[in-house]
Length: 390
Ligand code: NAI
Image (cartoon, rainbow, N blue to C red; front, side, top):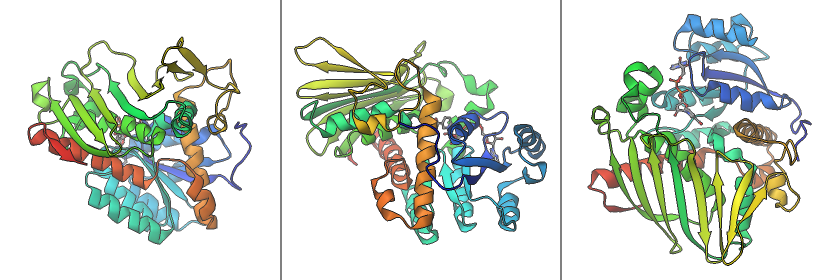
């Protein structure tokens, strides 16, 4: 159980690129990083594409105005001159900027925490992985939902055979917020359907990458062998960027799966679900009910496994914060992954490869696999919804 005691010697001096006043995801990063005030301190930022607004915002957050920079290049250059300069940067900007900012950050000697989808092309990911290795730095990828500890319970249940042999994965991340042409009035949505900024895909990149990573976290031994993706744009002006996609998967061990990603599932408010079905039992997570798992053993009454209880596996309860009877949610999930990023960076800095080997967190490989997922889905869909090797 976590209780706020420090896990690393000193908090990392942390900066953000993006995540400014109008940004969607920036506050989730700050909630995650600052929840354990033993892990990160926010000391600088290039928070906004609008330099003045970024400075005003950063100052408002309590950052020294002289360390609220007009752009990331200036920030990396100026901070490198300081003895107390930044050590790690989080990148919370639109997709098309991730690669160049990550590269510049590594070259400036910083650890990097970057938003998903990490980059557009796998080759970029491989190049950045090599650069990070050369520089001795960590890349964390903010699959923010993946810090819910009940996912680790699911992982242990799969590993220990509680479900029997895994046969099916039913993955779904859907909502209805883009059932109409929302991009005309919303800048944050507008770039999501612009291939130059968002990449080759909309919902496949925007939401299904989370669910795909979570399925890999739960079932690390299950590898997709081939997939078939059908994608469509119900709001025609979005084409070829899909607002709905269905993906069928064949896994190497004979298991099968499906993913439904959609932002036009009108009215849906609880559409992020992962159900793992084995030969004996099934377990299901819904991120709308992150305090419980549905555990269904064939022939027995359904059970709810409640977060924080001692009957859960130790690997799950290690990330418990508030104890049973009290709710945890997305904020704690982000805090859990940020804490693991800090532990990973600290281990890297100390040359502690043993800790790094045993730490489960979304790193560069998860980011690269996310790119592979998107690009393989797009390839399948664009070739006419055909099976393609993964
Ligand atoms: P947004 O459009 O709402 O906000 C982007 C922010 O970045 C704004 O503050 C903007 O001023 C700033 N910005 C843009 N270019 C910049 C630059 N060159 N330098 C400094 N600041 C810059 O976008 P949103 O929705 O926050 O998404 C940002 C990233 O986060 C995307 O990659 C998206 O896929 C990802 N995301 C991840 C989520 C998660 O749960 N992990 C949730 C939402 C978004």
